[in-house]
Image (cartoon, rainbow, N blue to C red; front, side, top):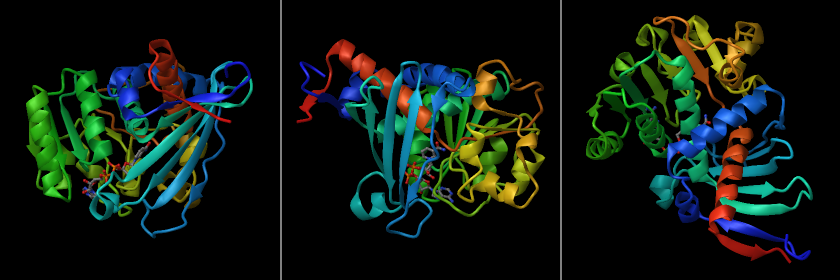
Amino acid sequence: MTDGAPRLLYLNRRDIAAVGGDQSDLYVAALADGLVQHADGKTMQPLKPYLRASGNHIADRIIAMPAHVGDPGMSGLKWIGSKHDNPDRAGVERASAIIVLNDPSTNYPVALLEGSLISAWRTAAVSALAARHLARDGFTDVALIGCGVIGSTQLTALLQQFNHIATVHLFDIRPEAAEKLATTVDAEHAVDAIVEDSAENAVRAGDLVVPCTLTDKPYIHSDWLKPGSLLCNVSIMDIHKDVVLTADKVVVDDWEQSNREKKIINQLVLEGVFSRDQLHAELGEILAGRRAGRETDDEIIVLNPMGMAVEDIACAAEIYRRALEHQVGTWLDLY
Ligand SMILES: NC(=O)c1ccc[n+]([C@@H]2O[C@H](COP(=O)([O-])OP(=O)(O)OC[C@H]3O[C@@H](n4cnc5c(N)ncnc54)[C@H](O)[C@@H]3O)[C@@H](O)[C@H]2O)c1
């Protein structure tokens, strides 16, 4: 606010990239802090409502994701829309989003950011942080199922964060998507990129397994996972229930967010076969050092990351801080 005239800073993708928002380091650092704050009870995060006004696919929805992070910190909302067939029907990415940041001293909006770039990178940073604590030391093989926007960002972040990755195993029901990502990985990273002919072959090869599909039909069986693997269950519905029930450790980002909307954890709770008592930890508790991460080389660990508004607001607040510092973005008058 200047001289009582409210205004807000608009940051598009180019602006966000200009302050480091197209690389994993910013997000990993912001979330290492934000997830610990969440574990310490220093965040507020009302349960997110799903608006399903059109379309019947699991990925047809708009979600409102409000949160407050830090003291005095920042409040905000991610408003993220999705239509599963946007790429084929409209030639645009599946997900679109804006993030509004509100200054907690006035609760006025102070920034408006393009949100789907931030959303993809923060989701990837959660997997990178999980891999730091829950994957086997020096893991070499990553299996990626679903090579769209989220999948390719996951892979890029993992390759940026872990130089011991040697081979990536890619599978997509559209082989051309896996081929395209393999070509990019070959050109930009010193790793082998193998396009697998089935999800099973990819999963069986992975020390770190990351499904990023649009499915609502489980296909990953527990006996596909090799001893010592970590499965970051980004697209949530890909795994059969035995994957959760037989894992040595199950970790979530947030129990309340995970146990709803008939997603995999919620289904198991409703069936009476899983409960909070069987949960090993929320990820922030592990980052804070209050719960153990991986303890042996052969345990199988499942992370169920529902995706939290706290993550979006923590990352967007850091991008806003950097944009102010470097005078990036466009000011919009509110009145
Ligand atoms: N957990 C989180 O925090 C979080 C955050 C953002 C997105 N997501 C999820 O990530 C998923 C991917 O989103 P996106 O933006 O990359 O979508 P996208 O449409 O860009 O890409 C999805 C890819 O998966 C492939 N695919 C679909 N079904 C498949 C199957 N059964 N087996 C193999 N490949 C399959 C498609 O061909 C496509 O290439 C969505 O389910 C979304 O909800 C999760």
